[in-house]
Image 1 (cartoon, chains in turn red, green):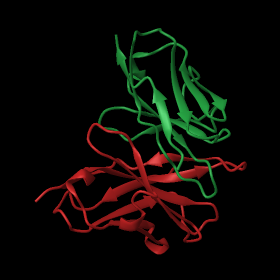
Image 2 (cartoon, each protein chain N blue to C red):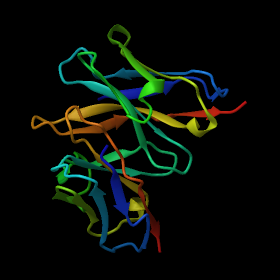
Image 3 (cartoon, chains in turn brown, cyan):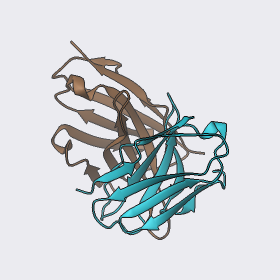
Length: 123
Length: 109
């Protein structure tokens, strides 16, 4: 069974950098095919995919946020870290990490999710 | 970038109703389409992947169909626990970008 848990600050000030950690179990990011991603959801709004990191350290980002995001992994700690620079009040959201599942015919989806962590951006 | 548009944005229905939610992609995405259910204060839950494949543990009253640009999620007989918000998501292109639709809120009539 795969489990994921997000951790990080609940409050950041505008212009600061946000650092979130996803700690997971039941999977290894050194196993071929595996990936862990980040998705956020502003209050009352839709889900927005942010970034994903693969077992081979390939990293993919949302085009609209690419310049502000960095995703890294620590395989030995079973952790994925997301940093987002220059935080703004519009970045207030619940941030989720999720396991990217896949099929043998190359379909991809998020099949396990953390509970999410609420981040408020305010001075 | 591929855009995903769901309709309707909200929907009122009664227990026992058959409900259909539509998702349209801005370009063809073959069957690289997933559906999620989200209840208030909870993380999303995968229902359907690859447009029509039911995720393990999901009740068979949920079904998905479509390919190319037009997709549907159908709930054959609404149950009280199905009132939630539903999202489609595409995973097309290589490597994929995981764009979500804006969501459809299913409410009790």
